[in-house]
Image 1 (spheres, one colour):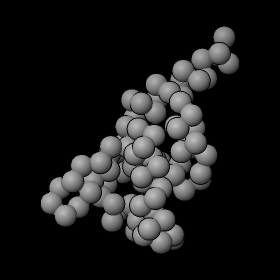
Image 2: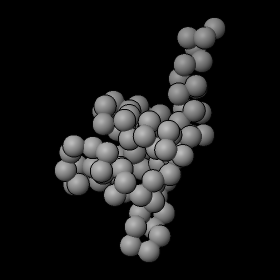
Image 3: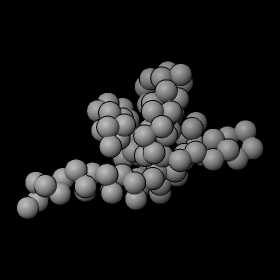
Image 4: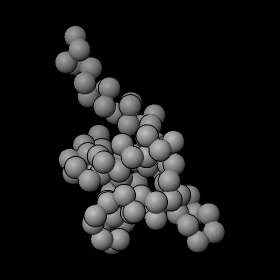
Length: 87
C-alpha cells in the first residue's frame, strides 16, 4: 500500500494514470511521453515507479513497450484505504 500511495504522491504520475484510463487503458511509452512536457528519462522514471507499485503493467511488443493500467489493483488498494472513512 505504501508503494501505491508513494507513486500517487506525484502529480505527473497521477496524470499518466488518468491519461491511460481515458485513452482506453493502454498506450505505448512514446504515446505517453508525447503528452508530457518533461524529458524522456523523466517520463520513463515515472513509468517505472508506477510499474514498481503495480499500478501499470508493461509488455514488450517488438521494440515498443506498451503500458496498461492496472485498474483492479488501483481500485482495490484505494478502496481498502478509504473503507474506514466510509463507516
